[in-house]
Length: 420
Image 1: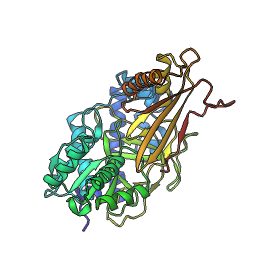
Image 2: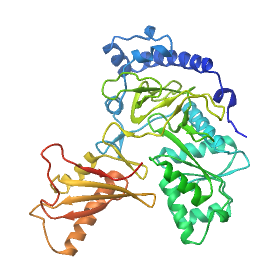
Image 3: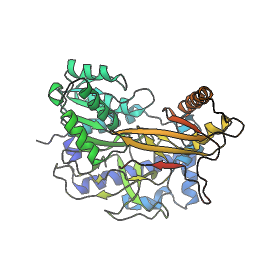
Image 4: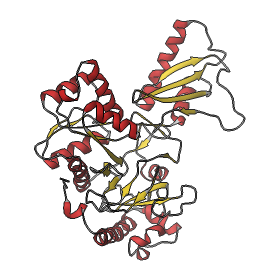
């Protein structure tokens, strides 16, 4: 039997959903016009005023917002964005309450009730995954185990000792948990898990099936962005046929990433989201850069909110490796700061359902040496610098000068062999 956290919202009629969206969009546009000079300036540049926005049908009249706009507007950064700095998102208590409701809907769709034990193995700290699912678990009334990430043997011990029935983490970490269980001589019958909610990185249907088989669970997808709140923008139901977008809070559009033209239902393009209920850091027509499509077809689960497909990739050059955003420009900055020529190559693959991440770096003629000890020392120093910048440790391999092939056109910086 399908469960709902807020059935009157999740199963509302299309007329009700569009009425909520229109009312909230009109109010949000008026609020940012009156209180956020940056938004007002962007609207004026496009010749739009709040009076022009009367319903969700007028959404296309508004200007887009990008991550670059957020940097220009807020000027507060941390260390994981395009240039080594990323915009920090902000929340009011109202925003947190709504975010936790969205995560509670996702947990309930995965079968969670107040009788369940939810082990949250996403990172806590500044990463939104841990905080969002933790709050959602409390909203449902589950016993919540705030494990955070890492220490795999202890994760398995807590799953068994505390009878965890639902686990929340990245899909690659779920796969690793399964591998470690095998090494310990444990199988699906030795753990009480029944479901998992996995997000923060791309994963294939083949990987889902492998996780389900290894852990003996049903694996659900979840989607979100820090700029919009975090995980819970959309989530999978029991049908596992796309993620329902919480349309009472987020209005989705699909656009052509090159022209900005709004595309029809079913067309693949860039996902644009408008957050109509967020008080702090409101996002209107925010370009996510994620490529997917939308469907309004009736879902067997009974929910009426639109579904989005798994993102197929991004319209920019960002890589998501083990749930962490990585940009070639960040790597180039570290290399140049350490005195290396900016000739490098990023190799990404997926082995046993876990992302591998290697960077080939050419030494300059001046630093070239055939001393293995010296090369290892240089690799270690460079690796530490990259970890500080990226928040993830790559394998660094120093190669002789002119080893990496040159290109007459745009340099081939990234070789991504993952089959997502």
